[in-house]
Image (cartoon, rainbow, N blue to C red; front, top):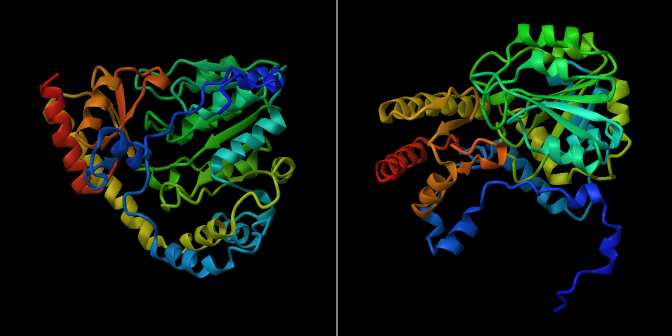
Length: 372
């Protein structure tokens, strides 16, 4: 087996070479293998996945589509865009479909980033924004968060200059779980120059535990806003990778330009289209989130552990040493996410699970903290 470095690496894009790859939550199978644990004994609360699994209607669509996997998907995702158009009361041409909303962030990079440009985002926001910006040579400007680890929209506005092409607003924010309200967003947009693209990343909108800002209204009023949504969280389709962006037609037309043919597979399109009809599954998911939030926040208070109040399906918890506590929970078969990569060394991020999983996590965390 060759171990010497390939001479072809001399052509490697220097911006890509300098990247630190995104580190997702560790898979159950990997943890079981490395720690010699029974996979059935492990619970994963690290990736904000839906503990209820996949909706019944989406499962049915997956099964019905399985025999069609020899056929290419509809490159334009016609049926899915039409269903989304009815849901959001927008024309189908105002939607772009991606392999997860992550891919649409990459489309934004292709279209709006470059070596002479900058992006603005909040500290402790989704790490992919910085990674994509680095890939395309853009400078990333991060503003400090508010005292509660939320976006400081005034500071973000002040950071914009003539080089700024894109501003990312993650709401509810991953990984802090904080929420920006409607009045703040309106004031923010009033002060953002019209030639700066504002991206509202709302991957957790359907599971928001408070009133979501009506950002959809902004698409109708402003020509520089795009909203991103995902089927991975509320609809339980993380394994199929499907998301979408909605915005003014000229911006959506631009984002279609770098989209590769057949970028979203046939099964994912069918499952997402069917999932939009399963409102009962969505209600159950929201109910479980609310129940989980109440239980875990009460348990943290009983244990004297600080946390950031949750507005979606995960919670940020201050355990003083996130990496250490995460590793010790891992040994006990509980996978959570340490937050050192986000500059939050003292925190772990915990996805809401089933109530049984939440109780198991709280029990193991109590044991770990008492033995610290």
